[in-house]
Amino acid sequence: MASSAASLREILETRLSRLVVEIEGLFENQLSSQVTAELEQRVARISAAVMERARGEVADQLNQGARRIRQAPDAEQLAATLVEAASLFASGAALFYVTESAARGGPVRGLPEAQIEAFRNLEIPLSSAAALAQAVRSRDPVATVTSHAELSADLAAVAGHTAEGRAFIYPVVVAERVLALLYAWGNVQGSALELFT
Image (cartoon, rainbow, N blue to C red):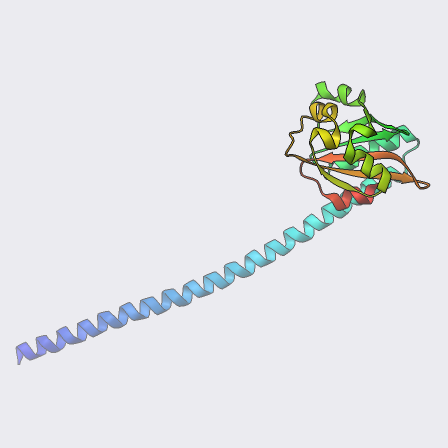
């Protein structure tokens, strides 16, 4: 009888151990599912809040830039304000003043101090910069590689562009005439720059 009680006890302990392990597993799974669901909800709420804040900040930057551009007292201040506003949406931004046959460097942001004066002294014949000429001719934005053929060797050298880089050109059109080109490179948010021009 003692051996049968010991056997019964062993069987019960074994079954009880298995049951405890199963209950612990179910509990951990349930807890894990609840924790996962809670974390997913929190991540979704935080993501939505971050997105809303980012949209608000971008809208504020666009609004401030557009307001400052509208309020610029003269052409020189307008050009500087346009480049400053654009630099918030690109790694680098500059303005070229357009004449009949050339683009002349103007205000610039995103270059080292030593290169800024060199940029302002640039005068690029449109015949030697296909992308600049296309933006003037079409009066539409142009995306281009930063090769010498598209932008000119002088511009590529002053701006430190490689032949594999990308640049974006936005014409500033007044009374059906392109007076300037907003030139941007690096990480460019094109919709904002097109809005400013």
